[in-house]
Every structure is written in structure tokens, then in C-alpha cells.
Length: 541
Image (tube, rainbow, N blue to C red; front, side, top):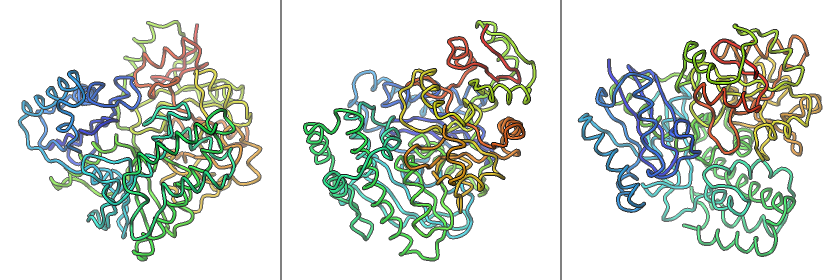
């Protein structure tokens, strides 16, 4: 047996991955253990996911045949972020010394690229493109050429001659009242509700302009971004929701237009490459992904499900498995790689809460009736999802026909979200509802938006963006998620609607639920009406 441990040593979104004999057996982000969203800097985390990996797999870091590390930011952090950070950095380095195993260090964007390409399983000529807010290796992005399971680097989008489009959103967050590295998606979510403004669009276009020949905008434009946002603030563009929506609209439009130009140029340079894999925080923007999918001439795109920096440990572990000759290049079945809790553990935990069993088995007939009755159902089943999307194992579902369900659910969970909720849809019915011409595999992971067909817009308003009528569907198949599939199927048999609302199982500002205790806490306080956990259905006493 060979073991590869993948560890991320960057600035935020720490995670750990374990691969045994070429198979991913565990992957989790620190935030889902520490309960601190988008864990930033080593004084907030960095060890929790490693400890969880050892606990849940029974495999110690010292048992590894290879420790695969993404990034070298841990070295830079020494003595920079304060005494507590220095202590945790030294703890990490001590752990590595004590493990006394071979270590391989991979670059940040190589790990991003690996997380996308090797999960896609694409064997034909494939482009792999990464883009984010920067890293220790002085890159904002990369372009790779891949075929038959091998990648070669073609281009580095370096910090010296380029700007980061990701930082446009990150730097905007405080002006919208949001938190950077966490809430960028909220800006994207409100953008369709705004309108075009020539002045604001041109400013953002200048900050994000693609010049051709793989060069972006004004190098190191952070200071200019700050000036722009300060000026917009002084002029009152962040004073109310309507003004914010105009800023969001033009930011999103300029950002998307320039990314489309970039990808069209890449395709022009490599006309015989018809597939593209993408990773990095930029591609958490599912609306931009829609335009890349529809307008750039590719037959298929695939977005790394862990597209952010949490995917770097994941990519490092895969690259390590490749070094050992044990990685089989094929499409991933799913991304359920996190902690799992037995039915016995769930039963024991239930005794600590004011809850009672409604059914001691998964009664799909009952669940569908409850959903039709507009009840809020949470699912805590199997292994925790890896990445930012709840894909059925830690999800909350509700019916889709009432447009007020969006505000109703946000109120139940104490959220103030602008992002539309996503639909889950039976895979064999998806094309009847959404305009899906390609990239169905990516849609299994809820990473791309599609237009909704006219006849369905008024049938499922709870999961459709109210202004542009797009949706971010998850296609559900029986062989990949039987529980989610059977809930959907039973609901469809009674209503003729093969779509349900899916939102992540978490409260305001907290990461997706991990443990049974966290799930039962939401049931007891009334965030949800019913909880499916450990093959039983519970309600509050």
C-alpha cells in the first residue's frame, strides 16, 4: 500500500487530501472542521484538516510514502503574521520533520491545474487554464497543454506584466458590506439586477482589459483599484442596494467580457484543442463560466469542483500519486471525500438534542409529501462534500414553485443572501428545462450557469435568477447519488416537476455542516423542519 498526503501551505482555505494506492480516500477543508469560514493565515488554522485526515482514515502523516505540498507561503509567513502565527508555522514544520518522509513541493497553479484536469478524466487534447488572486510563486494564472493524462506548461500569467482580475472582486467586497475571500459570489449574484453605466463599465474594463497575446490589464493594479472604489464610494455608488447593483452589473460585465476575449484568444492559438479545464478562485464565478462555455468555441469545459485554494492540497496529492505511478486518469465519480458518521454515531448524538424520530428508515414517500407541503428538509448523509458546493450529502431542499422560498429560507437560516438558490434536477430531464448544449459533466458539480427554457421559468421561480432567468443546476443521477435521486424521483412522480431547490446546509457566515451535532443543532433551533440523518428522519420535539 502506498500513501500520499497532500497539504496546502498557502494563505487561506487550508485543506488536506489523502490518496491510497491511487484512490482518493479523504479530503477536507480546515473551515469545515474549525467552523471558521475561509480560514485565513496560519494563526487561524492549518492543522485541523490534517488532524481530521489522520483521525478519519487511521493513517498518520508518518505512514505516508510521499508528502505532497502546494505552495511555500508557510516559509514567507515565519515572523510576519505575529507570534501566534509563528507558533503554528513551527508546529507544522515540526510535524513534517517528525514524519521524516519524502517531501515533494509543487507550485500553486500546477496544483490548481491538476485539480481540474485529473478530475475531468479528459483524454483528448485539453487546455488547462488557471486564474486567481495571486500566490507566492508570483503568478496570477497559467495555461497548460494536456493529453492522455499528461500536462505541460505553456504560459505563465506573471505578476510583473499582468493584473489579477480576481482582485477586482476581492477588493470590492468591503464596499458592498461583504468579506473578501468569502462573499465575492454575492456581488456576482446581484449583478443581473443592475444596469449598464458607461462610465462605471469603462473604468472596470480598464482595470480588467485583455490586451491579447496572453496579457491582462495594468500590472499590479491594486492601488488603482483602491482609488476607483474609494471614488465610487465618495460619489454615492454604495449608498443603497440599487446603486450597488449597478456597480455589480458593470463589474461583472467587464470581468466576463475580458475573460471571454482571453479564452477566445487561447482557442485561436490552439484550434485543435476542443476541451478546457479551469481552476482557481476566478472560476467560482458561475456566470462567467456560462459565457466561457457558450461563446469560446470549446466542445466541453470542466471546472474543478474544489476550484479555490482548497483544491491545491488536492492537486498536490494527485501530482504525488502520479509521481508514484499510481494515478489512473479517469473522470471522478463524485467529490464526496470528507468525514462520514455511522448510524450509531448519529443515534448517540440525537440523545443530546430535543428531537424525535419520525421514521427509522428513509421514507421517500413521506419526504416528497413534506416537500410538497413546503417543509424545509435537511440532508446529512454519507461523506461530506469537498469544495464549496453542497451536492446532496449536506444539503437543504425545498420545493421550487414559490418565488418567496428564497427569502423564507434565508430568514430561517439567518442569512442575508443575494445569490439565487440552485436547482437539483433529474439528469435525464435536465435538457427539457435548461438550455444545456454541452458540459453536462461540469453541471453534475453545480459549477456552470445555463439559461432556463421559457416554459419553465414560471414553474420553478425559486431557483431562477429573477432578472436574467439563468440557473446553476446540479444534474443528479441514480448511480452517483441514490438518496438525492430517489427524493427527486418521488417528488417528480407526484408533481410532474423534476426539480427541487438545493442550498447548502449552514447558517449565516458558517461553513457547511460537518458533524451530526451541527446538524441536530439546526433542527432544534428551527432552521429546518425535518432532518434526514443516519437513515432516519427526525423532527424537533
